[in-house]
Image 1 (cartoon, rainbow, N blue to C red):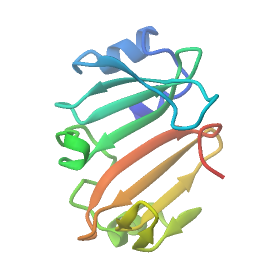
Image 2: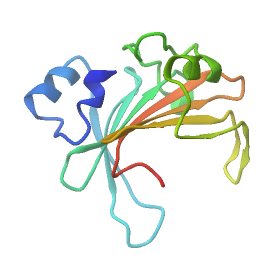
Image 3: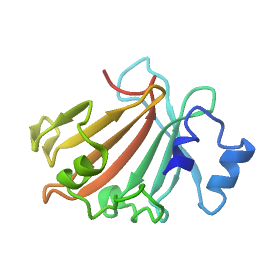
Image 4: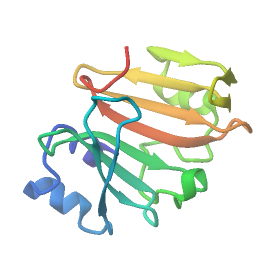
Length: 151
């Protein structure tokens, strides 16, 4: 996962980023904002590799999504999530490896429906967010720049 964290804030075409992403079959797409006046969001994604990159207006990577398989039709990301972590991990497993998160939510309901809870670990220049499905298993890991993390 360290190589993907290193992508944050860089261009996907930069030599180190291009090397990291070489095996992925990334395709570009855009998504119009749900709110009037906000810019269109640009992405690079590979459904079969379980990976999606969100780019800022300058074309640098702001967010990396790693899918556990099944969510939004993505296959499971096959790379490393770090020592002791996998998409079979539970909330307790992640906390035993990484310690107490900076922010978290227990399983519950929002306006968007039920969720299995989440943990977020904040570091000086990035954050790592772990989202769990309703069975308590890890379903999505989101890496983001400090500027992109929600307050």
